[in-house]
Image 1 (cartoon, rainbow, N blue to C red):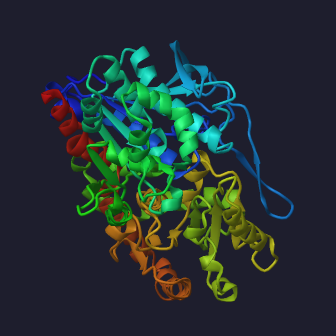
Image 2 (tube, one colour; image 1 turned 45 degrees about the vertical axis):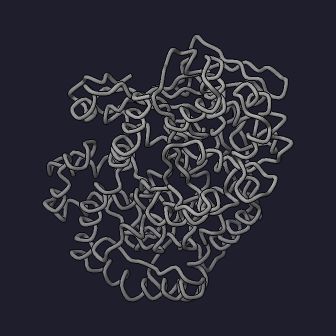
Length: 571
């Protein structure tokens, strides 16, 4: 654990001497290492980056998640180009996990399960460590996002309830609980139960829980939020709620948002948090409108902390070395990192580094290492419109560009798989061969090859459905300009010095604008090497400090963690 009085860290210099803060950060998935496949996409990468940045900064934080014995699926492609899924056993020791000498028990609808607790140490650049604790129950933590609704609620109760009990068993006493997306929101009921068992009044117990809970929502569409049927919730959570002094009606009212019988974990988390935030400025506006029914007559109290990326993970090592020679310190807090020095980097040296990264990607794809390469790699969900750039294939192929595509569709997302299959079929068609390549089984390691090896990063979501979009941040900090719809983070980041913007109106209008921008602006600029390298420098210098995870964790600490700790300690 980071030492609060260690003055070598950002935390120690700024807050460590005055605070007893300890944050427990709960998430359904974490991406900390490719060899530990307990993540599916952006949510897990964000959570892993949060832990890494906290370790760099010395912020006292622990992570809580689940160890999925089968991990997330390995992606393949059938002869028809359809996604296939295989789950492979994950060896915990080989993945760097250490078994803790504690176990926790959780009652799931009358079945008492015993969970093992594993630890993975996330090491920061200054020697600080953030421990990630992962709960493991045979047959229950079999795979990430597998099974039916009953299996899902059992996993989420294990995370929320079991996670709180694991902290107690480990002798840890967090001052703040950070619920990263709604999956772990049942932790609020378990914490209330603990307080009532210790003699606290049930209503005051809920208030104590609320004042020490922070909630981050990531999903800007109602269908993406966890909702369970009333019968299932009462069967699995009713007894726990009763021990916390809640009636069945009071429990259900905490999870209702629109008068229906469904129980939503996002409403539960919003009602039992002192502070809630979206993950970009635009997403904050969407979230306040979406959840306004929870506060009839009042303005929803949902702020925003725009996501960031862990620069030590996502800046290519070759580029990081070049930046350091200019005096940049990527691991430092933004105001201490000297990002303005990027402009002093020799243009030829910067292009030489980028050319090497392009050649590495070309070796993986079979691409022409001299042709402008467009990258599109992310989860295959229909709102992301992965097929938009192929709307007029003849027009696209007249451009001197090539496109690398990667990403997984959720195993139960047939529509997302349909989009992927059409792109895979296109990549296999003689007309497009060598110009469009789909790389299978997208993961952390493949991302670190694709992202810095591209010249342009393409993102075409239906506005405003992209909550944040951290893949574009990863590209930007590697000097890869973005060409994106003004959604999520790009609505805050865009200016003509760092990339190009699409308005995000209709599919037809966006496709037409996309082609015109490529034809009239991107391709001509790419062939003006001096102008292109200037844009690369601006992308790094302007966007790395603004969209680093160090900046985001500092915001969470100063805007949410410290005030919540101070508020609880006064009571």
